[in-house]
Image 1 (cartoon, rainbow, N blue to C red):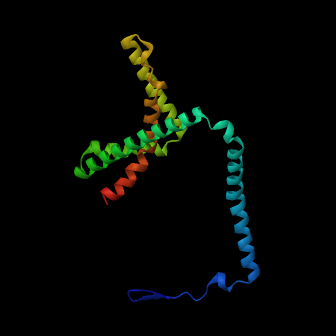
Image 2: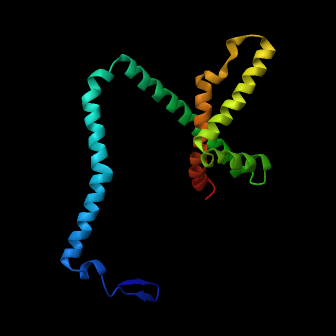
Image 3: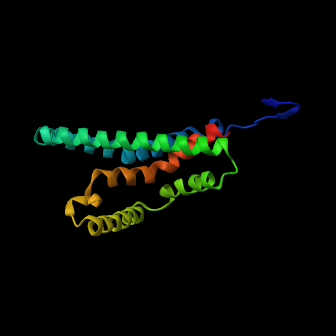
Length: 173
């Protein structure tokens, strides 16, 4: 029996408690089968693969790649949070500012665009910038399209929507 203000609602039957034992057992078996096939089997295969290949894979190059990946992720996550805070704080201070509204709307596009389309878009923009730098300096030392900067930029664009929306719920709420 639940009561809210003066409205009362009662539950007369509990379908699971009223069902026969064989139906409960069948429901349990189906749920267990789904759990085993969808979770336990794939996880056990992955753990088995790691156990079999750990000796060949875990070397200095693997640790270096792991550390580099963590560095890139940390840099991108820090930039995402800083930019999201900046956008939300600007929008909170001046709700009528069109630049703040536009940056809020454009920052959420990265999550709705498929990853491959966004990657091609980022590469197209950066390759144009590379060509411009080449014509400006006549040097091939300015190839930005193959650097860490582009990877961090793509990650920031991709995950900006998540940070902006989460902070927006707390900031503007």
